[in-house]
Image (cartoon, rainbow over all chains, first blue to last red; front, side):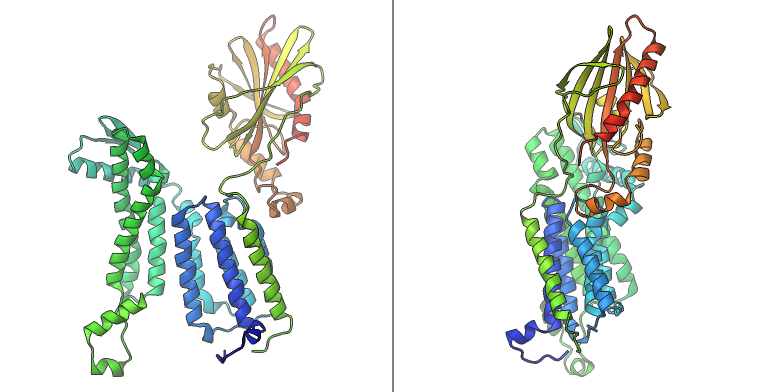
Length: 303
Length: 220
């Protein structure tokens, strides 16, 4: 694509400009849809912003090398997919509404590039990761109770080691003045999935050295979420036993519950940050002055 | 880049439609939960073999079921010579269709072990509570009556995925699976009659009741 100074009118007649407008409109549509569908869930919205923003920056970075030639057939198929998304993507929380960003991405890619879809492989992977919740819920549907029980046992350990007189039966945690049952919704599965997605996004966006990092980081993300959720469950047990319904509500599904997912995310971000491979400059520059301070600066610029 | 002449207008139009959809969504309520049209039961429902006496809305305490939501409930009273018949209908949405769960949630009395039977109207449960014989079943939006969650699911799969429902589904007027049930309990007293006679009378009433209930199922 020629990047030449253009007037506003000239840019309006270019296909590239309109593709950017269409993509932005779709992003806005999906952000709004996920906000409505999740009943104002900040965590879901933040994940969408992170993923769609990253995908936007990936595409913008390689805009000059993208094959942007489409056929009439591909455009019509793409537009049909988008129409389906507009009709069904914002209605009642169902599987189609959940995976609609992936359908949108396919529609947009068909309109933009016809059959040259391979160039968007990484972007498709990221959208698929973003909307993978129903897939993982299905895969783990038989094991959610196990995760609940594990969370309860782990929270029991935290309480026991901090000196509480506590008993654990299955997914129940029993304190002298009250007990909690760790339901599947509180098992930490959602936050484990959330951090898993973020870890995939991290691997896609930042260079990491060695295949084992690409394997270990997602696992570390899941473990971080599980460990942090255990403290949340322990706190729930204490609050429930101390008979303070307002505090319980605040930490259970009020703003307090977001603090724990924020802690988990910050912990993982700290871990991930240490794993970014320092970006090496071209050899000529490297040969002259390989100063560590220089690398530091580059890293912070990247973020 | 050789751009065909239709491409820019096509992209502009598509963008405009997407943007308009987004703007249109702003004013709409949260879509996290299902929405159904409120419904009022007809005051009079003729029932073959019975004379209708009275009907009144039922003030049921909403049950503590997992997902089911009670929209509205109504009781019809019929008379045949000196035999009374009471028909209680509860309109439940987002339901799994298990009538045993409903019975546990709505009726505190303990019932005798329920027998499941089938006739031309579909499946139903027959049991006695105290001095009364009861027939209990779900009137389905499509298909015959059901009593268990499994039967309800089978009906949904067999009757809900129809080409005629494609357009209403696309326009978000109907849900793909129509998880609604008119939970109906027909009750006759066991005075001056045997349990078997009472059950037979209930079964015949169910055959008379079902077609109209199914036909007049509440709109979405």
